[in-house]
Length: 273
Ligand SMILES: [Fe+2]
Ligand SMILES: [Fe+2]
Image (cartoon, rainbow, N blue to C red):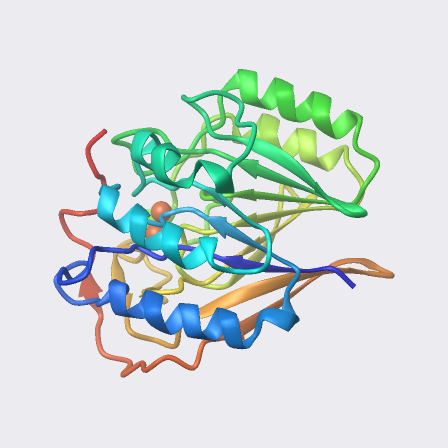
């Protein structure tokens, strides 16, 4: 049974700097390293769905590289809105092989009887995501020739979650969902929402969102929601293919969490290009 560990939204800052002036995400990476080593027999590969860095700084990518490079399992990554493509690719290219182009780091890999698609939805300086037509043309052609159950990972979720500020557009979202809906045994796995969320896009495509490794979004289903974090227990998802298709489980990391907050993401939600 193939088990894909899904991590998201690490928001790493270098040692000595707190994310959003409160979260010690560099220390969180030490905790994560220990957990990944201790549980290495419980997953076959790792997919990280973006916001690896808090603002795309090179030191955070060096830290991430050191952690994931030492693991004995394959690991694949795509950027999120808090990442920057150039330093991301400079430091982490071995986790994103054969990318579509330097301007869009989408790629696909075979994992035995399964296929992973890692899609880059980053738009520099913009909080919400998009997939360019060229990438969707490539995805459409790849899926047509793929006869394996597939997981499609990207940072942004092409479904409005009812959380105020996170109810964002998704460029080319309708075409993206339409392409996925023509494929059997496909599941879309995302991040960005910093909460475990499950839905069916356009009533056709199963979408699951992994919680954050570092900061959980306050569950506020009002128009002012989606812009504050809380120190709830961090988590992950595990995707596995069984007789009835893809099944997703959510787990929690045993990292110290004092449930304090909410705190604002203020002034840091849209990093510069
Ligand atoms: Fe994030
Ligand atoms: Fe994000």
